[in-house]
Every structure is written in structure tokens, then in C-alpha cells.
Amino acid sequence: MFTKYIIVVDDDVDVHNTSEVLFRLCANSDPQRDSIFTKGPADVLDHATSEIALGTKLGIDATRKLAGEGFKRPWPPLIRMSEEVRRKIDALFKTNP
Image (cartoon, rainbow, N blue to C red; front, side, top):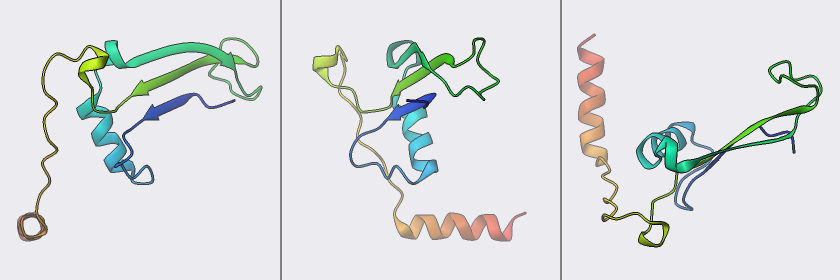
């Protein structure tokens, strides 16, 4: 597998929506706890690797954390803006450059 980065998200996340995935990455992951580095096969044309055909992979757990994973406090609910609030904010940004 030549993939260098994998971000794992919960099943309610639209993985085709980059903004949503990046939001979950920033909101749900702690770099020390939720990252894993490993070496594996790389594309021979990948100039970023220090060795030909061998490179580092990064996996990031951007899922909600559970008590069984050692998470000691309740996970906060996701706060979503209503469509009405979103329209008001969009209108403010359009009228105030």
C-alpha cells in the first residue's frame, strides 16, 4: 500500500467533505495519543522518502474517544449551527468586506 497518510473518522462523517474531515481531525485528535508512525513500502518515484521504495506512514485516529480507550471524561456533543444562523453569518460576511 503506497498510502502515506490515513485519517480515521466516525461513521457519521462525510469522508468526501474535506472541511468536515479536517474539523474532526483538529477537534477529536491529540497528536501524541492519536498518531502512529510506521515504515512501509513507498512509490519508487516518491522523492520525499530517504530510501528508495521505503517510507514512513502516518495514521491518525480522529474518532470520538470512549472510556474503554482510556478517555477519562465525557465526550462533548457536536454543536451544529442551524441553517438560519448560517444564513445570517453568510449575509454578514457578504455585506462587511
